Length: 347
Image (cartoon, rainbow, N blue to C red):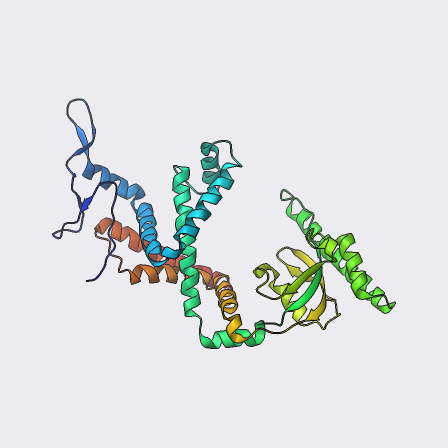
């Protein structure tokens, strides 16, 4: 038997085989009554709210149903994530009303904090679905190429990080000036290292001294700037450029060009090269990295829409109400077209 998803609201829906619009089992019963016997029936209420909120509610119910079914092992993680996020936000706002106002200011219009928490829960599961879908599309050739070009031996690296000192409220000109100053400071540190090397000073000791005096990385500056045993899987993607730069250095060499990452500007010292992991041991890391690269590429939005559509098609989604079905069709077309436009504009 083919399984289909149907929309179930607060009242039970009786899906009629003779028409395209579902009928509420208590459709003629009153939701609201007035003096004189007038009423607003359940069907009138349904027909009104479906035009205003139907599609948004529908999509949330569809996704919750599908993702809880497809990723049941992740529902506990999703729930804990949503609860932790709400707990953290509530510590920043005196009341739920203030929190809701802040969300509305950010473009997220929720009537209750619980509704936002439910959206966070669904979003967590949707991200899991998208990532799983993209990983499943990765080919053996892509994995082999990545292993050859992007999986490096483990390395012991030290770094000096210099960050922009511009405040978030600074003007564009002030931010650009602060970025330039941070970059120039790294260039100055590189010159100091080059001079020390020329004078025969121990580079490891000199690097440690400069890290303690200059680095903005509070977790490593008093440890000689040491990041420890490092590879691509050690950090998130914001440090990829640093790891790639380190792979090109010999043991004992420092970078002579400023390394720019999402967190700031770096100079690094490579002290030791270890072994490269086997292909099999690198498999999960490679899939994760390739997936991240795909989702942040020009085609990332298209892949996200493809993933959403895949799971809905897999579960043979069928919307019985013809009006909402039309709304859903337009909604999906907009998603697809926006993804295509995003891909084109980013090329």
